[in-house]
Image (cartoon, rainbow, N blue to C red; front, side, top):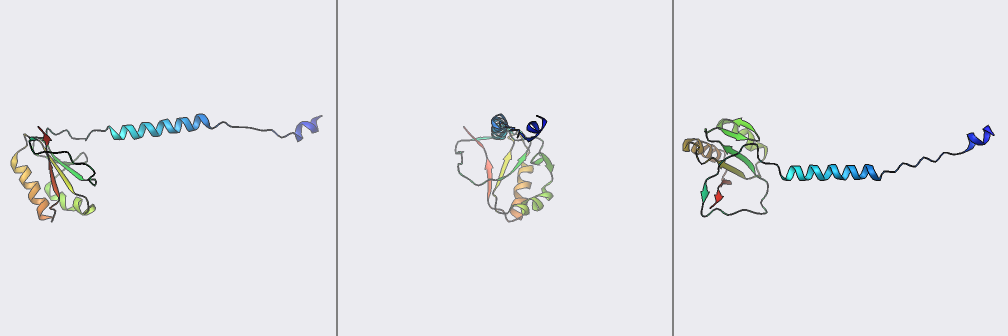
Length: 130
């Protein structure tokens, strides 16, 4: 009788359905969380009557100037001297410049001048429609 017991094959079925459900739920969570994420720096954009939403554009390099005149990119504070190094990493991507409505005008001019000195003419200045 012990020989029969040892010769029997044990069939172990593992049901992967719950595991696949969990993986799909995690995937859905991360997709939705990345879609609704806000930019790291909140800038009060100026309004303009000619501002129009742009659709189907390639991804842009986003630079922001806050109310104090500090330049930001991806949550890091930069100086205008850092722009050439960053622009070399993605020369094909247009630049999106977001300036707080209360920012000093000189900060905007300095950044725009540095962008033009780097040969970038594909600069978009973002405003909100009225």
